[in-house]
Image 1 (cartoon, rainbow, N blue to C red):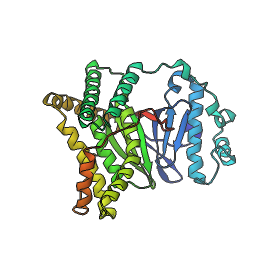
Image 2 (cartoon, rainbow, N blue to C red):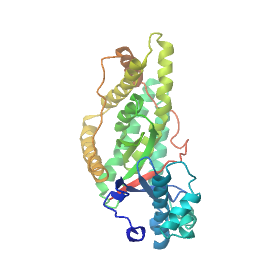
Image 3 (cartoon, rainbow, N blue to C red):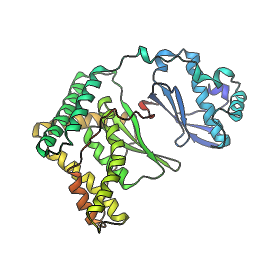
Image 4 (cartoon, rainbow, N blue to C red):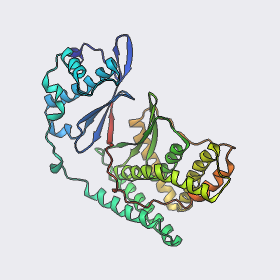
Amino acid sequence: MAKEMGISFGRNRFKWKNFSIPLSFVIFEHPTFLGHFNSHIYQIGLNKKLMYTAKDKVLKDIIRHELAHLFCFLTHGRTVDDHGVEFREICRNFGWDESVYRAYMNVENENDKIEGDLKSEKIIERIKKLLNLASSENKHEAELATIKANQLLLKHNLEHINSQNEEEDVVVKRVLEGSRKTSKHQAIYEILTTFHVQPVFNHGRGHFYLEILGDRVNVEIADYIANYLDLELEHLWKMAQKENEGLKGLANKNSFFEGMAQGYKEKMREQKTQIDSKALVLLKKDLEKKSEVVYSSLRYTSSKGSSKGSEGRKIGKNMGRDLSFRQGIDKKQKSGTGLLSWLK
């Protein structure tokens, strides 16, 4: 493919008009999308089912199709239609015909032939019910439900590690994105670490993404938690302002979100038993190993805190200890994708 394009490709960059352009590939899961190009981070995604259902020619045409989007972006920016005249011209310049223009039409939908992971789905459903119970007004019932949910998740992860399944997928999922990372996003990052996933901030041109890595069950639960918190933390901030007239300003808001994460994590630590702590060490090592495979130069991030907004932090910390997740995990079906093991 490099020869037919006349482009010199390296491991994760290529040369174009005296520029060195980054390029990465990921495998994702989605019921209908077969491929995508992300212009913010120069990334091409390919649907996992292509590996099982597409012939080599079709797979190559889909890769060509997404590469055409890349070069259309390099040439014209975001000013042209996705599959317009300019896109077709790029394809013709590389000697690609109609099969590339319409590559996304060449694979039949195989969804009905693919069986879901029933065991994982049952565990997610049980944890979903426990998370709903954890929002009970009965404090004792809520605490028991939270503990039970964590124990179930812990048991699942330990069984997964002990099974030593070498072909296990490492799931990476993009859960949040925006033009600027804020203290709220950092708070969500911190809270997600309690769900046995590794959150990662990924930055592109004027854009950021929050991704999570881990076992499929953990990622699905953490995905729901992230999207729930994105709205709920803003709601709780407004509620705190109504109950505390002097709670104003960006410094207090930032500290409030930081306090929310601190309060929730403290509550989770208090619920861990001595036996759990040994198991958590195993899970942490396993997650670090998986993270190194996907993110070879991963840098861990944490909130440094600030002396400003101490009132907001105190109030946020108290509310964080009462934080619960009221909705079902499957309430919202996003168009986002689950990325599986980055291609090197």
